[in-house]
Image (cartoon, rainbow, N blue to C red; front, side):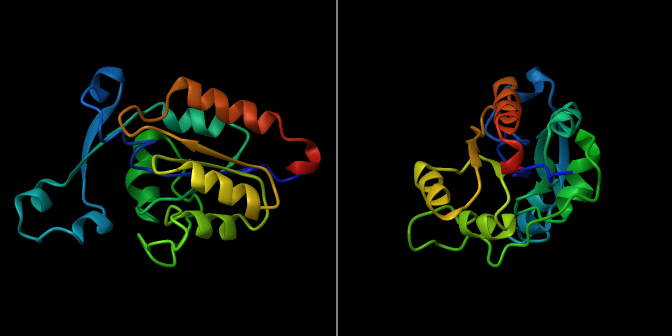
Length: 182
């Protein structure tokens, strides 16, 4: 049996449409969370730290992601906390692999997303789709030139989050991989 392609998931933007004023009207539910990366930028006794970060998640996204022909992995600053804080609210297992970043928000000398090089290294030559709100054409070009397998870099607007057309694009791309490319 051949390995399925990887689906590398960011949280803020694709799963948490943090820029959307209407997320609740589209089936998202609100949660207050205190991820370490967010808390590190707050005074512990501040009002925002006490309230927590507002996170909006769609309860159907986990089932829709699991139905896709991918191996899921977290590619987010939430790192392992995505398994404990995000996964239960959307119906994903709490033991997905997590990309461990060498340095968060590191400035890239070529102007790439700070995640791009690390994700290509983490994928280790396997086909992958990366879903994030910070992907640029420069990232796509660099991955195309430096990754030996097919890759789909799917930018999701942080106002919209994952939409039907994104799930369709992910399914279509994976279906289009030849058995040799999987």
